[in-house]
Length: 435
Ligand SMILES: O=C(O)[C@H]1O[C@H](OP(=O)(O)OP(=O)(O)OC[C@H]2O[C@@H](n3ccc(=O)[nH]c3=O)[C@H](O)[C@@H]2O)[C@H](O)[C@@H](O)[C@@H]1O
Image (tube, rainbow, N blue to C red; front, top):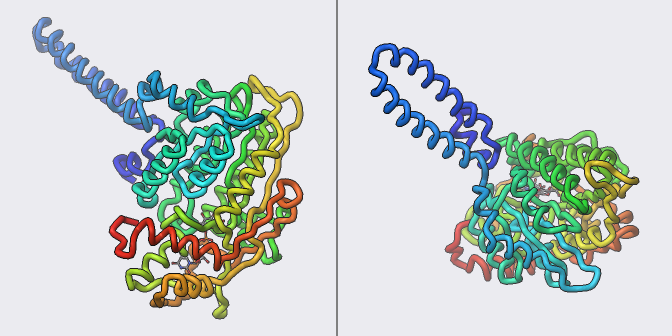
């Protein structure tokens, strides 16, 4: 991969490559200088030296500042700090103060608003990357702002911004929803999964364990960790060592990584295995969303089918149920026990399935959409390609019910009706906004 491509894919990766490149330029410059000095007058040499050194310094500073998603000065402003503090303010007794990563994402937006509405303090963090249409993320940000939630534009890989945020606010909880999502996209861009779901996770855990007081940490794992399991429904104690995609592997790695931070530093950890979450303000890369767009535009949709003509099925879970699961997890998370890099006792480590408990096939999903959209889909049925998909998912949520009071209440028919209503109000029948 060319370096320009690396810069594009990883906008916030600390700029080791660039800094090294700047040093290399300096070294080459000094080598040339030696040759040049021997043949020129001292005066000319020093004038040239000062000019070139200045240019070299400016170039170095510029390359350094590009290495981070945002210059530090943006975060140091009095006005900026005031916005962070105001957004984090708690307006109920025993309320929480939550740092929500991926706040301008689908689940992040809904969870942030639900927390704010019940009087908790919320500060959002989002890098607004272009995995899917950033204008949808900007629209979600506007919605969050109108609910009194400030979303900081920054990346979970940027340790400086994280340290700054923990410096300004004593967060009681981190709700970590920022991730590279999507099962099949991992074939095209594997490194983006490692960058966000592993490197970014570790950077955020480092900041969380160093914070004083340490927050409790609740984060989004995925139903995809069950991989090639055939035992249904999926329970938390089932095997998760046979992932079918790199996406699933990074989520499984996240479960192991968070365990070490729980073990060594006493961070309270709750991992939530989300099962194909859908609903208003959803993700355009997901099947229910792209099918809706194509059906309305009269374009064909591709429906994958499993081996021997078996339909694929998903335990599609409505966003409002997921939000209840997230809030229930935050409320019951228990305290972290560490400070100054040492733990004082054991802290909770929990993993819960958040699913709907009633899988629906993909062709049924399509016919529900056809009904709500009053339009027929042009179906192109093909065998499921070997790109990371699993044939079915099905959640057992008894543990989540017992521990956090989770009880899904929205069936796919009802949830899709709400989604379609939102879709038409947001994009209109003519769909003049990009998706
Ligand atoms: O629950 C999860 O763990 C995962 O759920 C979704 O992943 P997925 O279930 O694959 O959701 P979709 O991409 O919406 O696909 C749903 C179903 O439609 C099928 N599909 C998808 C796309 C398409 O063009 N045609 C098609 O038939 C897929 O094979 C799958 O069976 C999310 O995209 C992941 O981020 C999340 O972690």
